[in-house]
Image (cartoon, rainbow, N blue to C red; front, top):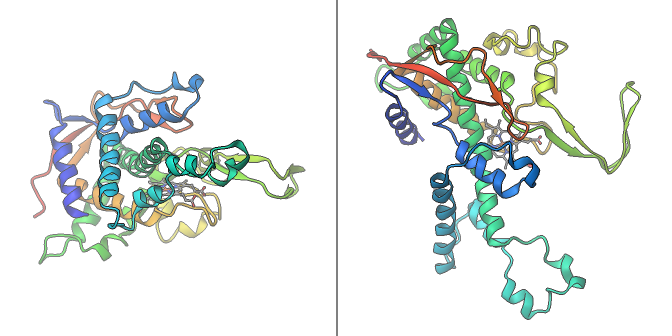
Amino acid sequence: MRPKVMECLGELYSRLDESGMINLLDFSMNAMATKLGQLLLPNRFKQFLPKRDPKATKFFVDFIRHIISERRQNPDLKPDDFIQLLMDAEMDITNLVADGLSSVGNRRSWDKQLAENEMIAQGFLFLVATYGGTALMLAFSIYEMAVNEDIQRRLYDELKGAIDSETGEIPDHVLARLPYLEGVISETLRRYTGTIPLARYCTQDCKLGDTGIIVKAGQQIEISVHAIHHSDLNYQDPFKYDPDRFMPDRKHLIKPYTYLQFGAGPRHCVGMRFALFEIKLALASLILRYRFLRCFKTDVPIRYKRFIHQTHPCRVIVNVNKRDLLN
Ligand code: HEM
């Protein structure tokens, strides 16, 4: 993963304008999220989508098509990955017609299989929901570092102190357990609920404690993670960015099910550990090499735009100074 992070750093540096400012959203996956919305949302919601970037869209659609066509040409190679799972579920229309399964009566036997466009949409969704969410959280973390210099300094000191003197790098097992880095990322995930609301389908009537509310079987409910993360019943001074909430001496005060950025229960995010480590690695590499500062274009507080339920910022602009250290 380290070479990938270095690639990203190169990209970050190339996006700096002459004044040293960068819009962190250019660095994320807006374009892909927009395309996904164009593909999947009903027309009345499409007006809220930002203008899409056809080049980025084309790149990802062509990329997924290319993988699919390569694998069709080499059917014996069956890598154990996401695209292969989608391909295994692909609908073979030729056989369906030949077998007479296209009739309405037999529809249920094949209507769960995927057409190629659906495979591409799923591939897109996987990228947007995984890397998109990760990139957005990285952008918010850097924003908070720029507007809270004391927090950035504390994080920098922790990271610098963790560098191995022989290798000049932070060993992965150490990076995974740095308490303040963990606090910064957890607080970013609490404060900026980038994901859409959690949804659950109720299978049997449920009485919700002594609230008098009954959720009936068959009803679908949405759980607003943003409201739970910003209720003062759950967090003191909830709109304050405070990584100390997640430090080892205070972490136990967080009530169960009030921190839901990765969901909860058997369907919680399967990529959580991967995403957390990826953000840690990227943030640590960035903070050790660059100092992020508030500039005249930095929005404080952040301005949001309407975007399929997400807390999606209009822009996240900060100033970047290269540090001449690491020694
Ligand atoms: C900061 C980054 C991420 C956030 C905030 C996030 C958040 C979430 C949330 C809230 C859910 C729904 C959980 C629920 O309903 O209880 C979810 C599901 C899921 N996530 Fe993530 N995720 C992130 C990154 C990733 C990554 C990197 C991957 C894969 C590499 C991933 C793969 C998945 C999958 C496959 C599901 C569906 C799980 C299921 O339905 O059983 N996520 N994620």
